[in-house]
Image 1: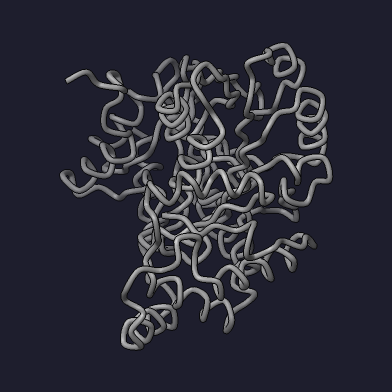
Image 2: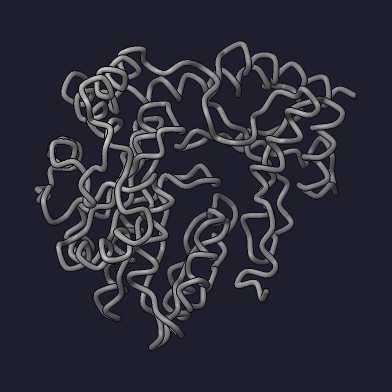
Length: 383
């Protein structure tokens, strides 16, 4: 057979998690919590199944859940979103991104994304017949070069894909970035796909600026969110896409032939949980900032530099002063085999890898996991 993605192999996340299990290593690589979910959510899932919600859900998502989502968006961003025609429940954020790209991108179209870019973006564009033009965020600090973006736009450009809070750069886009993007989108009639799965995980008093709340972007954007991130339960695989009705209608055309409908009892359970705990997202920033600060304090004076993450489940570790000249892939391998700590190097997130001395650490772990990992990292640096 002829492969449509001949050079695509197993993701770095799967590889590092598998090797962490084989070596009995602490896994700070793949971004999933190692602590329990809220017991009440588990109870509601059981109640939903016992109540008989075990057959197909509506294709576009359970209406009561979409109403809860609309209320949440209004509370978070002050926006009024129609739960009937503007919200679609998806199989996690990954399916929302995939379905949106298949709906909006055609053969020969160009999509602008920013490296380091999450690894599902480019394959989705290619499977739609498009070309993904990946522009690197600039150092220091992983910031946008809007002049370079402006120069990259051609008559074939259809979509710009942004991600904030950003995985893996751990940055949060400023309002000025959305202003610059809106100006370009309006001038060139572009659509924006905004990956906002870590919307609530922002630190040090920063604000998450959603495309849904920007007057220049709201009517031309698809915004993607994840309950797996908000509820500490990545295995739920329940997300949602929010877009104006014309864009939503096109997305649903793909969604109905992709996953069709999402686990019915989980949708009932999440809707009930949001009814009981409508502020659950508001607690995440403080919770994860505490995790970030704990890890950074534990590694102070180790030789590693940890520029404070602005958001997400992650924290970057700069190993340049400890192992000068090492590639991130080699450093991650050495750390895994010699210290038994699994991390994620940044180079797989680039089309053209940059000479950066960073690996990504997941902070969505128990305090004892973070403490044990920090002790191993300090010993590795000492040796």
